[in-house]
Image (tube, rainbow, N blue to C red):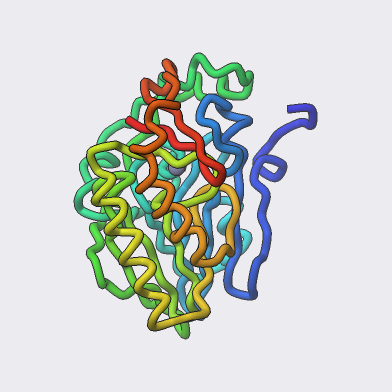
Length: 269
Ligand SMILES: [Zn+2]
C-alpha cells in the first residue's frame, strides 16, 4: 500500500447508526486472488454489552480498535463461520461464540500458508505467526433461535448453512440482518452439492421479510445496508448456474470453477 499502514490506517471504521459500526478491511490488499474487495466486521453496541461480528484476517490488532469504540462495556465476540477471513483476530479476545458445527475448526491452529504466495507484500506480516492463526482461547457454542441480549437491543441467531455448515445469521430487534457469507454482492463462494442447502437458508432469510418488512441486510463482504433484492437475485442466480455451466473457467489457485452472470461472480467448489 502507498500509505504507511498500521492498525489505525488498516481498518476503516464507520459509524452507521448510533449503536452500529462497520469495521472494514481490504481483502484484496491481502490477497486479490480471492476476488473480493472488502470484508465487513460489525460492532453492535447495546446499553450494557457490545457484540463484535467476526474478527477479520488478523493482519493488524483489532482489539484496540474495538476497545476505543465500546469503552468499558462488556464485549461478546462471534464468528459467523470459521473461514480465515472471519476468524483471524479470534485469539485477541477472551471467548468466541460460534455455531457448534464449526466449533472444532476454531479450537485448533488455523493454517493460512496459502496466503504466503499472495502478490501483496503486506502478507509478510504473517511470517511472525508462521502463517498460522492461534486458536480461540475459549469457545462457547450458539444455537439457532438463541437470543443475545445487549441491553435495550437484542440479537437472534439464525442458522443459515450452505456457504459452510455452521454459518449463522443474526437479526437484531431493530431489524438489521447480518448474514455473514450466506449472500453478498461480488464473488460468492459456494459448493455445488450444497446449493439446495444454500437456497433453503436464503429462502428462510427471505421469510423474515414477511414479518418485518423494513429489514436491512449487512453481509460480511462488499456492499452493506442492502435490501431483500440481494437474496432474490442470488436465489435466481444459483438456480441458473446449471444453465450457464458451460461458461465456467478453471481457477487453479482456488481449485474451483469460476462463473459469472450479470449480478454475481461465483467460485464453485
Ligand atoms: Zn468470507
